[in-house]
Amino acid sequence: MTDPQSYRPAPGEIPTQPGVYRFRDPHARVIYVGKAKNLRSRLSSYFADPAGLTPKTRQMVTTASSVEWTVVGSELEALQLEYTWIKEFAPRFNIMFRDDKSYPYLAISVNERFPRVQVMRGDKRKGVKYFGPFYPAKAIRETMDTMLRVFPVRSCAAGIFNRAERSGRPCLLGYIGKCSAPCVGKISKDEHYELAMEFVAFMNGRTGPTIRSLTAQMKEAAARQDFELAARLRDDLAALKRVFERNAVVLSESTNADLFALAADELEASVQVFHVRDGRIRGQRGWVMEQVEDISEPEMIAQLLTQVYSDMNDSERIPPEILVPAAPRDAEDVAAALTALRGAAVSIRVPQRGEKAELLETVRVNAEQALALHKSRRSNDLTQRSAALTELQTALGLPDPLMRIECYDVSHVQGTNVVASMTVVEDGLPRKSEYRRFSITGEAARDDTASMRDVIRRRFSRLLAEEAEPSGVPKFGYRPSLVVVDGGPPQVSAASETLHEMGLADIQVVGLAKRLEEVWLPDDPFPVILPRSSQGLYLLQRIRDEAHRFAITFHRTKRSKSMTESVLDEIQGLGPARKAALIEAFGSVARLQEASAEEIASVKGIGPSLASSIAEHLAQRDGVSAAGGPAL
Image (cartoon, rainbow, N blue to C red; front, side, top):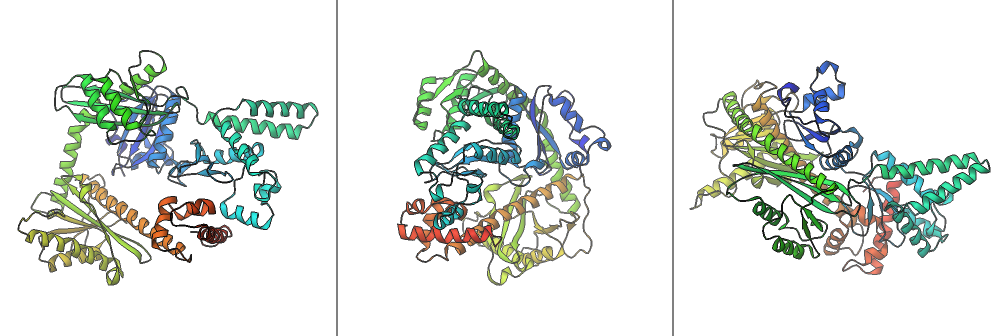
């Protein structure tokens, strides 16, 4: 548990402008994102007497170890940026999205034979139009339900649609008027497509005709005293208007631009960029870099734009307009290079007045704030890392400084798909290029201690082999000063005994148990208890949690792959090459299940007959899942 006063910003550090703030835990994970009209006022409230805070807020501020913020120009911009960060970080204390790590969108698949309206999360797909994001998630479903009364577009899954088409009977939505039932021919393919395009037009902002029509119907119903219908139409209008209140714009809806600003001193420069798409702030980035050469602002901007966009080659990431505080040196050449990368014209402008100039000023304020905070905290960060390593070395009684620490974690579900991870910290900072993953099979997968022995033996056998080579330069990383395992005495003993057997008894092993966060040493019946405020304990927790995250990610990948293969293995005529082609084309079995036979047949190597078999088999599996059986 952290004392909030230990990371409370100084009173003068927090600005009074509107903005969005993030609380981070000791492992640098974002745990809460919020917005404020006045950042200083809002953030100060979190550092009041803990007894006066609500239980959730008290838990959040005592879990966090730092807070940071981004200044924006208005509350509306703060709202949009808050949406973006919640989607990106999925903070654990933002309760409204705890059910999923991605943001909900209203989507319509215009690339299907009969376009489908649905709520979608996750990565965007080609041929699907997205609208949103919306908050809360309940509102998007209510809006979708309301809009289906006005635009009764198909909303059912592929399996339900195919069954209705075969049986000649529509589903419930078709009977109650929330679907035009194209599956049974109540509306033609062209008429349904036109209805879907009207839905898209409404969501794109062309609301006038529909709003006027509903308003006229409401007044007409009220005039003939059909108040029940009038009330329903009134509620429909209110719900439709709420859609656009949730996704309001901050600039002209035709604006697609990146806005850059800089703040610099003699040693360092801070860069901030706001990404605006369709008039909305979709994201914000910032970084601080060393001033290794004395260059002017135009030169710095030219280098900045060239480096930022050098690896991008698509129109979605490179906008048609780039706004900067000063024209870059050789502006025409820079613009020409970006135009070639994008495949369309790119304009580099310096706004002088109006809403774009105001937003660019907001970006500049963020750059100045970031530079000031970086300078004030840089020495503190270095001191904390050094203190953590020294404290840990002293607590464990180690003779040498902890230059390199390796942490190992084993992950599985009831003994299946057993994997392990190795994460590395050098000088207190993660060395992600030397992270490693291990698949564990056979006898080594029988339990956690056997798995730990296998991983330690494989990693250090490789080390010994590389040290024996003439060059003597290990490619797998040099000897660690400390090995950390996720677990208690059994895991520690397994790792320590394996190292002794290999002649590496000089490498110290410790274990960090999750239950009470105690540190276990080999052959010691009592753990080392580090204070809860210990920087050394924080360092161990960060390493352990990173190893756990890395292992879990690998485990989920393996499990998903094995489940995918088991489902597709049931289909005759579908070999490894064709399975790989299907997964590459659709991304997952879930998306393949939503595809029509015609779409499946478009994949290379899949003929019409096999495509029909695949669609029919997946539709049957979908029916099992919908009825309460095992889902894919």
